[in-house]
Picture: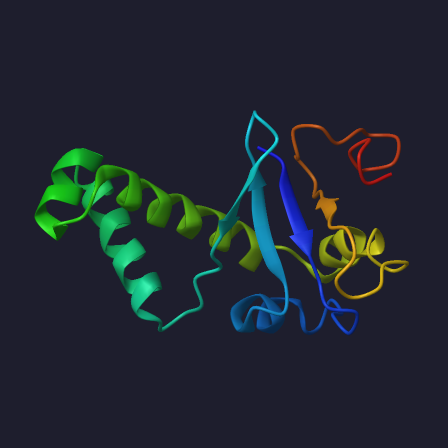
Length: 138
């Protein structure tokens, strides 16, 4: 999955997670057809995070996404999105400063509100060992 990051000009590695939580930095998943869907960063203590963590616990207990969604009176797609948002949130929370700086490197020359760039981190499916960035953001 490619993740596109739109960022405020003032975002630094030190403020990255706080900016994600406030919405100054946004994550978007690029679909196969080229359209994008916003991925919500689930800040600790929010209702959305608690719901996603509940879904995660239920998945660990062996329930299917359909059963979880039915018990929560929501669609399976909405439950799946909440669960996937939690997984991505956890990935970003585990990034170290160096990885965040590498991700933000592609945004240095962008003015606020300009074209987004594709973020990459170690293990990104299109990253190359040579430069650590996918061809789109290089």
